[in-house]
Length: 197
Image 1 (spheres, rainbow, N blue to C red):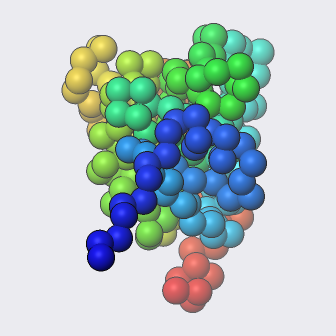
Image 2: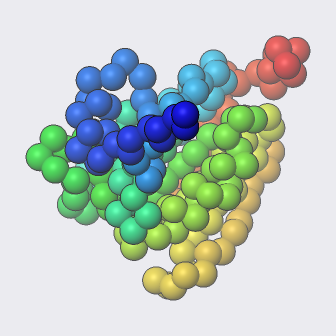
């Protein structure tokens, strides 16, 4: 006797489940993909980045969200939770719940050992399909390093720049902000992180 394959979830099933769940899951091709919890250092970096952007965007038509704002990529079907999201202009949402954003301007991921390959590869492949996305920022947890990909003049080409070291800064030009690595990594102790591994 052959086991029946598990039934695929619909988007409506996923959203109904996700809005009641105690944990977050990505969704793609009818399947839930449970997300792992984040480390202490990951959480500190996410909060530092969100705080820096919020302060710099104050008084402007931009909003900053952290890990609980779901983003949907209609061309590929992925529903996911970036670490930090910035939207400038009028936010567009999947439905009247206003918990699934469709038009982010900047997406930021803090790289974890378990997700780095995905964040750099397949996930970035999904993100690049968002016409609204201007910049994708990757922040290392293991050393003071930020990589920034900028969409080149509404094309499919992305330009990479990076900043390394606590004295460095990197511009998030699409929203007119600058991230100083000393602020991004405030209270992050790399020597403690190494001892924990």
